[in-house]
Length: 182
Image (cartoon, rainbow, N blue to C red):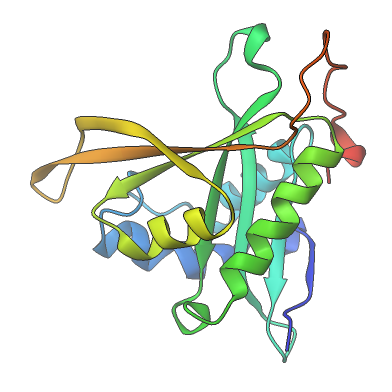
């Protein structure tokens, strides 16, 4: 059964923290060193939704089992059609198609609101994340070698890209933001 997917709400903050806190604390998947507080996560959700989509996936009981969002790729104005993406899943939701459905919804929303390229940085090694990204059309670009330091070692980050539009004629309209992006 397909997990329902909806726009994230500020009140999802505690559930999002519960998903990401063990990843931050125990793995090198995230380069954050300290998990955000629920209040900090609520602020992130609110701020992100001003310009970019942030989605939540729900399990059969209506509990959050994953989230995905986009953010700016780079600050210069010429990059405004490109986004970086992130996805995190509750441990029991991994390998069940939740990530693929969540990412599919996020990429569809990004395309519909006028973004042209999506990028994903994946701390390596992470075979599951690489497989997920490639299953939804991301293609490898290259690797930043030893770019982050966490848990006592230097880490590489691989970069993947997915085109959201195929035809590139003339200057595109700026992406829609705010409510239109959510």
